[in-house]
Length: 306
Ligand SMILES: Nc1ncnc2c1ncn2[C@@H]1O[C@H](COP(=O)(O)OP(=O)(O)O)[C@@H](O)[C@H]1O
Ligand SMILES: [Mg+2]
Image (cartoon, rainbow, N blue to C red; front, side, top):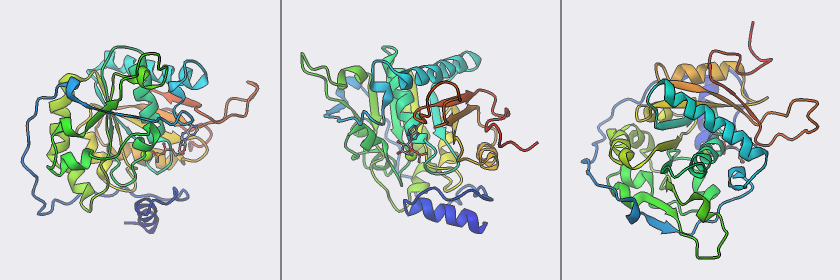
């Protein structure tokens, strides 16, 4: 393991900032320990029984909650690409992943989920699978517990860890009514054996058992070059959507990130938080991204080596 990778892993685990770029090494898959997987509980999930909570979404970080604007448009376009991918091969469960912390995985995951929810009567499930550095509950203003780690540890059934926004009262024009078809599984908090929990077959079992209830399942992953969890999570997903941060993610890191997922289906790269093209009259970084359906394309323009 290179020193830089060790530093990246330490920084992530200590909830620090993304480390500076450099040589990164993809860690090996987790070594099977004597961790005993808890028995699988088969549970029928009836969505009408999902607990409702008062959510207080952070509208600053959720541009897709607005009725119009650049953020809405940009995520609409990403949503179209995701729909398009469904014509190429069956697709329901999408893992949002990147190499390093702070590239925008959670931002893309939650806004894509909201965009999918707002477009239709489809039922959308959003899962925070970053057990060490969860942020989706904060973005939605939702409780973080019980959550995924409780289910994975065998302490809860799927229905126990799902939540929805409290139905709006009449005359209430709050956000809850806009995302009534969004179900959320929070991370449930960190545990010492997070990697083992995520790598256990219970994650795939969860997706298999709840899948009939949902049209789309979006999973937010931890950074794949810091911890192995995202590669484990990809086994439960149909495809991986990769995120790179404009002007931040070195091309080599994007390449290594893609390589880490081996033969998984990669939908493409979202190049997140890039400056608007000159001449469009704005220096705004917010929400701008380019989507490259071909992950071999020059995903980080100007950074690709010849
Ligand atoms: N396109 C964007 N525009 C504005 N802020 C963004 C954008 N993408 C990410 N951010 C912000 O950058 C920070 C890191 O993003 P986050 O989604 O938490 O990264 P990750 O999940 O990859 O660690 C957050 O404060 C988030 O709100
Ligand atoms: Mg995150």
